[in-house]
Length: 112
Length: 116
Image (cartoon, rainbow over all chains, first blue to last red; front, side, top):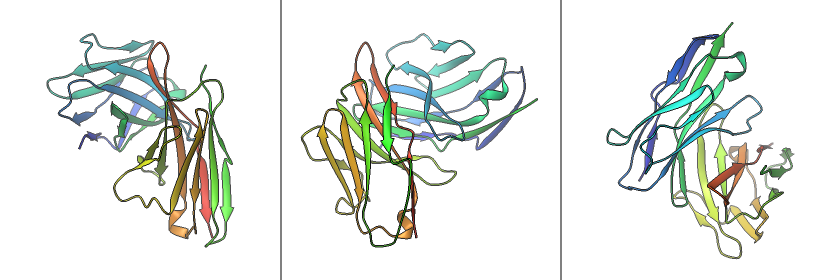
């Protein structure tokens, strides 16, 4: 079974600084998707960024970028110029076919 | 955009009663819908996957007789918690998958269930 591991239960960053959230996964599939979702206190899941496994280029979305290392099965999220509104739970997710699995989450605190 | 709604957003019920939660894709037809359960300060756990017109596929450990899923159309899936007990209290999130330009999955806002 596929597993997703987020080894950082909590992270903290100073406003305007950069923070990296870690994620590793285990799979025997060659074709899959990876995601980072943000869950603010409202509990609404918000897609931050996605990466197709067949693409070697790391995905970027404005201040958010990933470091996708397929051989190492690593998928970290970098948040640049952190803002107070970035504070939330962040979940790393893996999907192959109809099977989306989530990591345990990392709670990000942004200090003013 | 792509919006997934859930109704109700929160519900309180007595132990032994049944509760139905609706999940609708408002502006697209979903190929597949998913139901997740999230306990406080924990991650989302997949409960079941359903396709319109066919029986849902339940994850190991999820009682299909307790958590009834009906996927009546390409825009509506319902989760019924039968004979609810306090341990069923949780946050239930649905998600809908659609193939447009990309293969995308959108999440509803969740339903908080409290069983007294």
